[in-house]
Image (cartoon, rainbow over all chains, first blue to last red; front, side, top):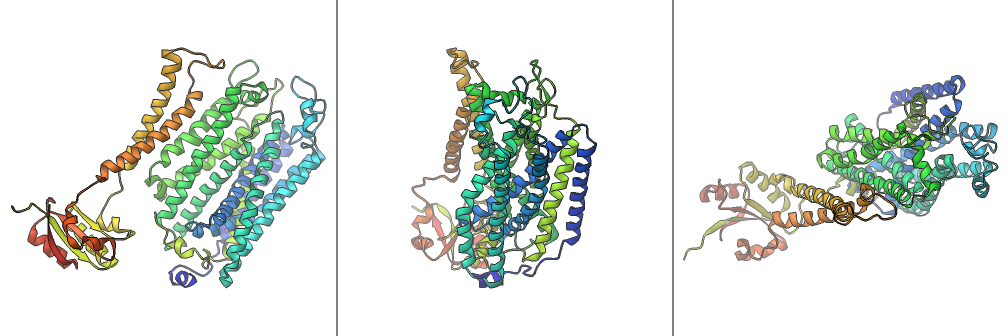
Length: 424
Length: 177
């Protein structure tokens, strides 16, 4: 197969270094992080800034987890069409260690000032209407799971596993470029075999610890799956943007064909439906059972204590239509999946709406004196944007820094020939 | 009794031969013609100028029908024909109608897709004039054919024959209907 690959007229040398783009991304990242840090100091609601930062970190970590899961799924099913895009996923995985560094401030705050980010860490935190966290029997029963040591240990384990699995995938793939040995393919398949369950468990627990525990009274068996759907959907959207970018730059000319975009677009479509299925199921089961322990989570996102509706109801509607109906109907069309100018806006839209979904899951934990959620349209959105730019800038920088270190595509992958001639 | 003419058939030996011949027939403006090959040839649809199928539109129509059927069925049975309160829920809500609606969307989409495909491709077809041509069985083995039908507005026995010959077709024969 390597002879086949070698005969294909593609740029087999490392592509030109996008160093200046990487520097730009780093500047944007540093500026976003600096502004967020200033926000913590100057804002009257530092807790709100911390929540906004949690949105930013969770958002980009989710996308990076999505890249990891896509790479693992690619290997476990021995996929062929995605070989040409797999290398870009591997480059993106370089972001994990930086995401860990960016998560550290949250951990440090958790220790220095319990309750500053996750309210349940402060046992003296007042629960609206019924005592404190420490005296709450529902917390006491969950304290074996929800405590600072477990939280810290688990978070370190998540990042440790993600960085380690990513390093294995990258090493095997990059090494194969040099020697073409098929053993690297088998190594990646083994990594995928244990990496997938590890990935599924870690992303589920990460979603539970980082996001769901904000309202620790609540439970939903769909939460990990909901998070996974967003992870992969975000990662696929970024993948499509990378494909379009590399095509526009010229690197992917002769590598990418219409069918690669079609396959990627189909997956974006599939995960649109999957996300809707999971999110609807979560809502529907809670709506149908109508148990107060579960419904309060949605009530907070719809009603104030006096029965008036709050802004989150409309955010929920935006998510219903913007996260599902719009992309679903738009992506039904073949052309909208393969024409560059038509697929670009929808994946950017999806990336935006995933951010809104993260806000919907995290920000309503910020409450006023009546226990009502603070509105969506508030100054916190500014801190969400600085955090997203900050963490995103660092992720893009990590990707672009890894990008010139290897060949554009895994030229000696056993399935590269199939991938280059991918057809419907 | 002289049989009705069906069209002309030409034989090709290799994939590139029939691919380029198809391009020439396409560029000559023919519409009622087809290629018979023993294997799928990627890109042949483009060389033939075949547009994307309209089956997806039929599927969409089926899906919309299914969704509306589900919603209206749940509304009609539970909130109109025989009003029934279940589990303290409203007589009708799109929430509990959604699972049924979406199942019916899938079901009707599948029916419309399968039905639309059979409607458009005319299968099952028990007889086709090329079956009278003895060599056609090699179209399942090692040879490829282009058939141009006589009902094509551009069909002209001499000119079409010349076109097929010029495109590299061998063994050009007239087919009876």
